[in-house]
Length: 262
Image (tube, rainbow, N blue to C red; front, side, top):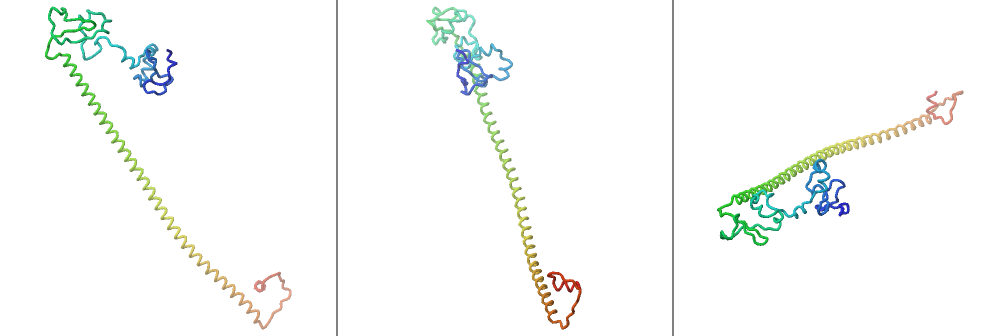
């Protein structure tokens, strides 16, 4: 099956696979992105060769591969070399190792302490109060539990501290924004009050000027009326009239202007 024909979705997160940074399992041909494959970008681009990329196996397939022996387990010790020589490596896949629950007679046991029955192989151990391997296994298990619990508590503490820090920063930002808004509102209120006072002052000045203008208009009307009355009274009450010859006249010229030219 060609990996190119596999659906272009990550088998881990079900997201679209990137164009370059991806791996296909050698056994199941499923595609994974680097994050789901648990491989860093630097390792993928610089360390891994083309052969390693083509022979890469996903975690699911690694878990399905049958394990032989117990050499790779860090807690248990490897099986005795003399015991391994009694059977071939191929037999390990189909042989189950069990501890004998009852003591067998010397005649029914081998010199190596082994008894075969079908596909099951029994290994006799000396009766000891506590096996060193058991103590080591319990110690490592307890240590693993302690480390896991400590990491979990540490993660909770870090998350709580981060939440507290973020909340404090948000509160500080809100207080600062509120202070800025209040300062700007106070400035606008003062400017509005000043403009209101200026408008009141200008209105008072306008009213005063209006009153003065009305007074001036009345005075002008009074002066005009007095002038016309005096001029008419003067000409009507003259007992003597003077006739001037050779004095030029202008069209629609008033008597006041003629008197002024004389």
